[in-house]
Amino acid sequence: MQKNNFTDKTLQTIIGTLLRYGVWLALGTGAAGGVVYLLKHGGEPMHYASFTEADKSIGQLLKEMVTGIKSHSGTSIIFLGIILLFLTPALRLLFSFIAFLVEKDYLYVLITFIVMMIIGISISLGYSH
Amino acid sequence: MTVLTFTLIMLLGAFMAGLIGSLSGLGGGIIIIPLLTIGMGVDIHYAIGAALVSVIATSSGSAAAYVREGITNMRLGIFLEIATTTGAVCGALISTIAPGSLIAVLFGLTLIFSSINSLRKKEEHVLEQSSPLARKLKLDGSYPDRNGRPISYGTKNVLGGFGMMGIAGMMSGLLGIGSGAFKVIAMDNIMRIPFKVSTTTSNFMMGVTAIASTVIYLQKGYVQPGICMPTMIGVLFGSMTGSRILIRSNPAKLRLFFAILILLLAFNMIYNGIAGKI
Image (cartoon, each protein chain N blue to C red):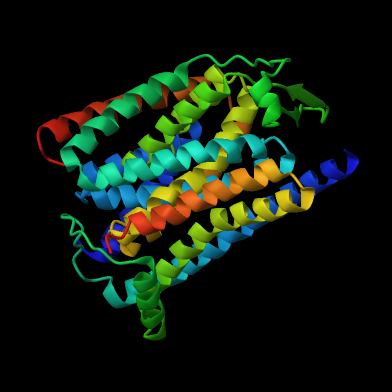
């Protein structure tokens, strides 16, 4: 029991730290991209009044992001910030998974795994192949 | 309107939204959507994408502190995330085929419900005896009181809470909100979890719930970097400022004021939805 408590406390510290730095890293990246974006496109009119549906897989989006960052595109850097923001809770999930494995709490290893699977399925559902 | 003007207005607007969201206890996303749609003339689909991104930012930002203090019940959160993520995926899929006006009306109704619910008197209760299922799932826990002494609590009605969480997740995926109000009802009213634990655990869950639906929105083109950037920065700083104010002041009067403000916003959303302006 003593050992279990110790692991839970350590997990709390790791996850708390991860969440905090993840958010700041994501926000910093987003803000940097924002500055680049505004310097290049600040004077253009905005175009968000009507929605055009896109259909790109996450792989495609990431590839475009990398090409965009190489050509110093502000929106691509902001996009990287958004992806970093997504990774924060996702990593939190992965850390809990590992921690429950270490604690040998197999019921919660399974429960965490189910949640990760649902997110995985969601990625494939969002893109109509 | 130029991109620069839009960004500056949204930075300020999102800051206010985060501030009001945190002071009223309703979350930042709930005001971002009316601000973007009614205020800035942005399509509601883009607004939902931006609001979800800001929900992830505020959730992770504030959850960090609560998790370290040991108030958040992580097992309970992860278990209920099965329900919220499933609901969120369904909600996001419905949202991609639903017309904007229907989403606007549903959003208005949820706003009304949430703002009235935020005024409800919260009494702290601690359940001593857990139900067998709750014990099997190890959902009971303890949290430190003001002096750092642990208060133990149990829980019951696990399946009822799980079902309500599915609905909370669906509303989150459909409307782009954190749906804290629904989550707290599931944990507070149905599962009898102490209020402090249910609010922080609900916050903890929002990030994972929101990514389940946001990956769908992302691939459908709802997440526009140009809108998300000022929104997530503004909301995060706004809600941080809000939580500082909350520590120093009595929120009862503030809550009433904001509940009325949000009710007006709700009627505006419903009117615009029915009139086909959104």
